[in-house]
Length: 150
Image 1 (cartoon, helix red, strand yellow):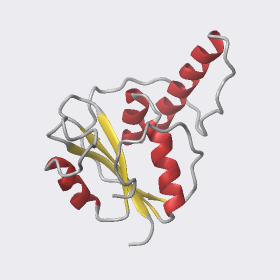
Image 2 (cartoon, one colour):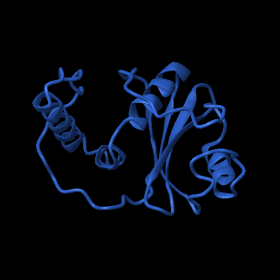
Image 3 (cartoon, one colour):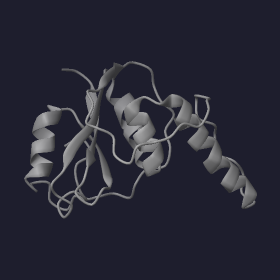
Image 4 (tube, helix red, strand yellow):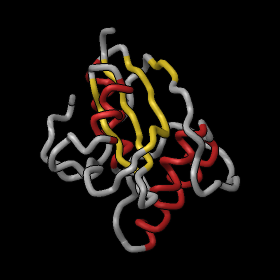
């Protein structure tokens, strides 16, 4: 399959790990579950469960999405995994408001708008969706010592 997929794992400690692969997502998740991805965040946080996957036809779009999602809060990741773009927008505005209150300039706005809705503590594993539009990149996590394309 051309392109690449991003995936989000829910770790035993309740945290989330976002990754990217050109290979089969289930195989990559199995490697994380077995602790075979040396130096990775997930090695000491097993067991892991696939919470979300999403395929992109273009590798550059997948890389941009992974980088953007890695910089998000837990609440934003959970809203995204549920497809709750209204809450995602609200969470983006809240963060922007806090940054402005601290005296810094606001970040670029998220591409969706909406209202606040409640968020469950852990989303159930979901099937991914295919996308074909590029996403704006955002901050990324520090390097974790693994090949980003697994």
